[in-house]
Image: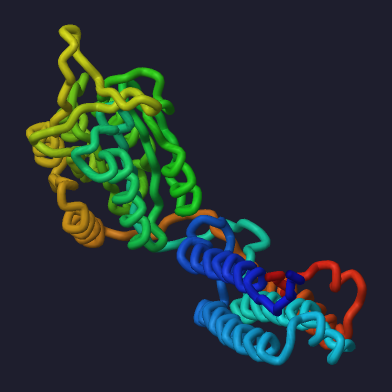
Length: 382
């Protein structure tokens, strides 16, 4: 039996779906995180991000038009007969013209959004306070009594606090058996998020929980002459601490710095994963699984002697809210900082290729050519 070719838009629709997912994904990531993650980037007109999903609606309208056209053509004749009747018309070219228009619309949306990039760094003044996060990255922070684990929960909490800050300088100290300054005091929240995303127990070779050393190192990060409010936020499960964290917190507070204790984990505790490939847990010398538990008493001691607040992340939303409220009550002062200035428009990077694609679309006819005929984008044999 002779095969009959029919008009089938299946390949086009599949390609269109992939492209729209890419368009929406890029727009969502830039809208949510672009200004936070890309240093020196600003969007002049964020409201025009709405043009991206509007373009998606146009694509879906074209879907329905294409499906209706397929049914009409197949009802009229098979594809070879249809091509013989309307020989000058190219279905594939019509699709290419649509995608030139769709990509041009995507670029035009970003031209309207007008990304700006700071062209130079300059010293400036801002109102704010100084905050240093001391984050426990010991192996016990991988315990999964908090979802997905204590360390991931702690990093998310810090990111949520960063979302609420404006002009404040932040620093980051990481610790396990030793403490290290991961990020000096800065207003570059994008850099802070970048460092946070890469943190794991591997960044500190010596295991343990040197909370006192971390507080001392954070204390040294502050300018003692600065009149602004200062805070150290210790985020830990408090297990196996090796030094006098309470004494370090009191010393910091005696010198005008508030010390907060944020407890990660639960009283019931959880085992500590030790093998990513074949999941296993840390065991003691007798082969029993070790259960890591939150040391709530130590968290209370740090907060009490540091004149701060003891917060527990078992309810992370309330804990983050309470921490932010406490920080907002602290004294803000004038800070010397380095900021991006002379933000320059970059809409032309998107406007020019958009106009070029629209010109190509206008100049590209609908007549067939041999190369497009070989693509068979819309044919199906049955």
